Structures are given as C-alpha cells and as structure tokens.
Amino acid sequence: MILWLYVNIPIGFPIQEKRAMTGARFSLLATLLLLVPGLASAQTSVAGDWDVTINSPQGANTTPVTFKQDGEKVSGVFKGQAGQLPFEGGTLTGNELKFTFTINTQGMQLPITLTGKIEGDTMAGKADFGGFAEGDWTAKRSTGAAATAAPAAPAATPAAPAAGGSTAGAGGKWDVTLMTPGGEFPATATLTDADGKISGTFGSQMGEVAVTGTLEGKALKMTMVAQTPQGDMTVVLTGDVDGDAIVNGKAEVAGMGTMEWSAKRAKQ
Picture 1 (tube, rainbow, N blue to C red):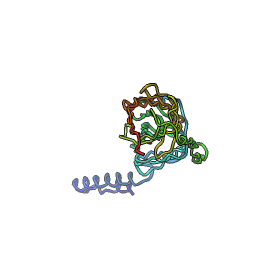
Picture 2 (picture 1 turned 30 degrees about the horizontal axis):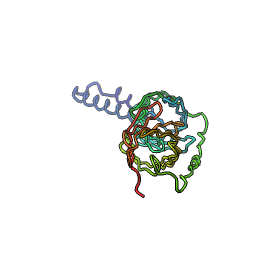
Picture 3 (picture 1 turned 60 degrees about the horizontal axis):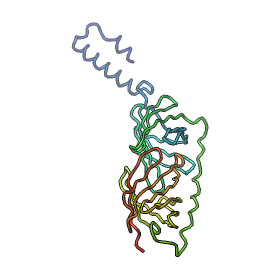
Picture 4 (picture 1 turned 180 degrees about the vertical axis):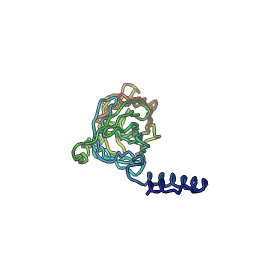
C-alpha cells in the first residue's frame, strides 16, 4: 500500500498537494513502524527465575530469586534457607535495574540496594549494604525450575533465666533501642549475670537469638550470631551499665560498620 502511494502520484499534481501527500505518507510510515511488533524497541524483561550471587563482606552467597515485572516496576522474592524474603519498589529503566530488600538481623534491619545492568541472560552491578559497606553482585537466569526453599523452622528459643537468678549488674530484662540506618528499632534483652558471665536472649518481633558475654565493672560486651538470608552475621554489642540503663552502646556488625544502641531496665 505504501509503495502504491509513492509510485501512483499523477505527474501533473500541483506541487503543494504532492508535498501534503508526502508528509501524510511519512506520518503513515512512522505509525506503521510503531504498530508492527518487533520494529519498535522492545522492553527489557527481568521477569522469571534467576540465581543471584552477592559478594558481601562476609563472602559470596548465591540465592534463587524470582522477579516479577509490570512495565518499569519490579518486585520479587528471595528464596533462601531462612525462608522467603519478598521485596517491591524496584525499577527497570532500559536495561538498568535497581531494587532494595531488607534483611532482619535479629533486632536490626539492614537495607541492601542492588543496582546493575541486564545483558541477555546475565546481570551484574554494585551492592550497597545500608551505607555501611559496598560490594558487587552478579546473576544469571536459572536453567531449570527454581526450587522454592521451605521456610526454615524457627530456631529453638534459649531457656529463660531461672527464677530467682541474680538481677544485679546486667541481669534482668531490658528494653533496647537500636539506631539503624532506617531509624530507631526496638528490641529486648533478657540477661543473666553470674559473677560477670552474661547469658540470655536478644530478640524482637522477628524472633530471638542467644547472646553471651561478659561484664567487667561497668563495661558490658555481648556477642550474638544473627541468621539472615545472606548467611550468619556476627554482631558484637558493647556499652556501660549505669544502674538501670545501658549507655554508650555500640553495635558492630561484622564487616559492615557500627551503629549506636541503648537500653533501659524493664519495669517489673
């Protein structure tokens, strides 16, 4: 049809009408190019199953991830040994992908932002660990059906301190406040102090984890291992016990930096 329009203009047509028809033909051609599938540039697709490898300060960890895409909007779910971790709010502009997911470190929330580019069936880019550290990441499309890991059973809750245990020093129940990159995060600690040897639990709405440590004078030091989708993460808490308060608190997340924390002894 387009070719017919070009070759069947009468030679005697007025020049203005020829120009008008030429402009109309260009408009028609542009419209056809946009409507014919495959002629216009196709939207890059990230939808589907991928194996994502994140190189964090703790080492490399590969996790199956299923991405969903609605235009430039991206969401999905990580499928790790600790269970499924959904995320949303990602974007895909051209072949440039950006999304953020948050891991819970048994009392702390750490946002991890991945940015990168899609090249066919592979991706690569940079990882930002809540502003504490940086790393890189890669991904490739899964060759087989992604195995969905069943959520892990909750870790056994350590036994609570025996009734009548010492409440001197750091012993007792504490209301804890952690200053994370995302703001204040509440938690609790239930501790037993046996002549400076500290044991007990540290937890939040995400669950509890065992904690051990020492109290020398006023100087408190506790260690816990948080389970995250990226593997175990060691957290060291230090501070000064000042009566019914813990002050000058520092929480050091292995390889990622330090944040502040404080606590008050819970009222009975």
